[in-house]
Length: 454
Image (cartoon, rainbow, N blue to C red; front, side, top):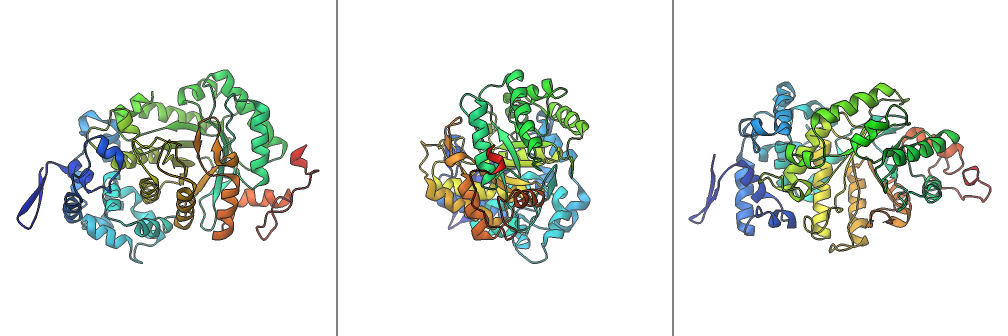
């Protein structure tokens, strides 16, 4: 179905719904690379006017990627809950944006409608929001998950301790873990990106992580971010807490990652059966990122932000413990500068939360992007205000294995301090017992004889 908007005798014509979505998007380099971006500011505004007047029901009637050819589309349509949709079913996209900013859309109401929202509806409304809208709406969405720690409660901010090493050297990894723990990081999880994906190497890292966790009775969970197939090979004999996988928003793009929905279901069942959690049993960890479907040439003419939110429908199906966008990691071909990275991160966080996901963020950039640490400081602070579930903790903020810039242990300390955020409750109690943190939340001086150092 074609859409039109007329202003001063000029007719803007959009061939179909996915074109409206693409042209209405705030500018980003990836959409320009794909030939999907609006040709002018005027065309972008015209598309946003069209989008604002579209009934939300439109997205249930017109699939942007055909139902018959894409299993992600089938998942979106087949799992849509009309009862959850009912409170907002009469709204246009513009009305929905206004409604989300009212007090009627309180945390309880936002929980009630989650399963009634398709990713295309959520992507659409985010395109009409300014940055403060994205922050205000996300801040109202509380999504709490549990394994050995409880993540996502209001007033708390968790950290994934990321002790990567270019050769998977156990001593280097252990040193980073201890350093991070002494700064109060690790309550979201301790997660290693392995330098090699071999089952033997991954199992060795998992054994090391589990030994450290058990030795000091740390109430957290571990993960080695190997490919899902590698994890399945060792899951019966290695201490697997969380199963990791990168996902995206189209069947073809997920195939390029070597996965499909059936494989994710198998992994979810296998990890759940282990029953390794103590306060809960959510076992999946997903990473996403705007531009992943485009980089695989599998975006089907859909803009990168809408593709990203479709990935959240995949994640939602498997009730993850954690999910985060690696927002600036894919590179400037997709998000060129600090301004685009900040906007994309706020979109991802808000859209994920609206869909009911425990959204975190890797606040990051690559060294060839037009971005710097000041941009990341701003973004990290904005996400903290928005209620982000977790961020990354990387030694010095510089990942020496993946060669990109992220957030440091010190950054997490800063964010908790200025926003008066606490760690996950179980982890907070552990930090107090270990005399790493006081009951008032202050980091205590670490003496050379501290038991974590021996």
